[in-house]
Length: 117
Image (cartoon, rainbow, N blue to C red; front, side, top):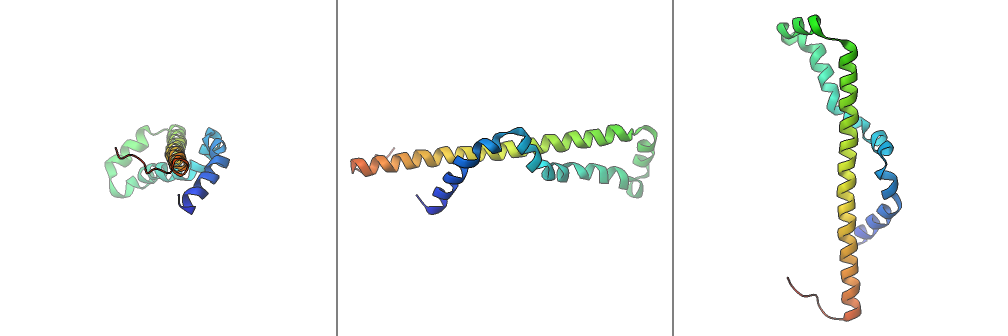
């Protein structure tokens, strides 16, 4: 195993439970969630400059509270989903490295090369 793989395994053993909590995922992922949802606000508020009919529709029926709450909900969903996906990917990598480590230890103790599948 490489030094980088060993460092990752040490890091992940120490931090995997902390990073799995949804509160941590929300706190760390909210900038990504805002980057994903803020273009909605930009499009709505700049629409009057590039599409007058959309501006008329927004001024007639847009509830600012609903718009802000929808943007907030989108940001929270994307933040948690993004960090949860990252956690799953790191966990999968960790489990693969554990299996690799176990296989290498078995090879060392048996002294035989592994069988090809």
